[in-house]
Length: 284
Image (cartoon, rainbow, N blue to C red; front, side, top):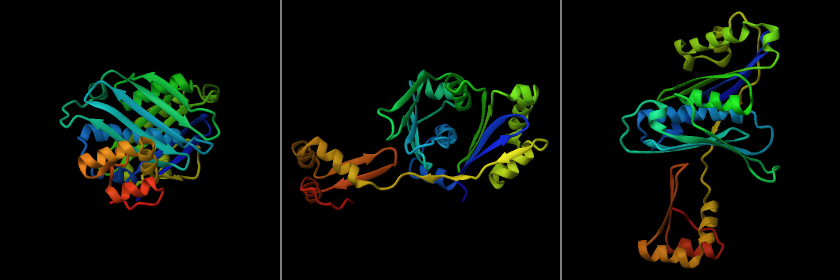
């Protein structure tokens, strides 16, 4: 199993980039979800882009990217930490016939949120969904936010996700006026390779065989959904004992579903009592 993000630099062209590959992390994210194939594809592509952005976090924090739309896929959300702990989910209709991103998402917006303890408040960027696919939507975002020409190449299967990012740095045209279009054309052939069986170094060497490539150390990606009942207890305490008891009386138990991690917490009367006595209840 291989889950990583790996940055690189085409030194003679002044073009930087990164490769992302997911397999076991991607499979864990899909477990028990039963998304239609077009929805899984969008979620996989979103996962790749989020990691390509999140790998640049220089401080402790969390990056969250959310697409909200009026189409049959009403929400896609992915977040990752500075240590590349990744998680995500989609909200969609049961039956999906649309295939393209505009038809799946409809009119909507991209919301990027950066939350760091060192910041007095979260940074948030909101832009309209503009593009025929996830790659184009985020290329548009890069043009607006980083003001660097950027290209994304994204592939999702049932078992793996692959992404390649290229960004043209300010001195690129001075180093080689034809470098950027040449690198774009070479990167576009990435879809013709058996990518999931190759290392990042092998992929980059095949794509940019005539270029001098500096490849940095790979950063490992992990699935970020760890059981955290303490957050559930805090949420129930915030509701208050009266409200929680009324739920318990009506349904016989309190059920809390963690959508982003697809995990359900069930608490009986004894567990609820323990929460409000600040003890550690058992969740089943």
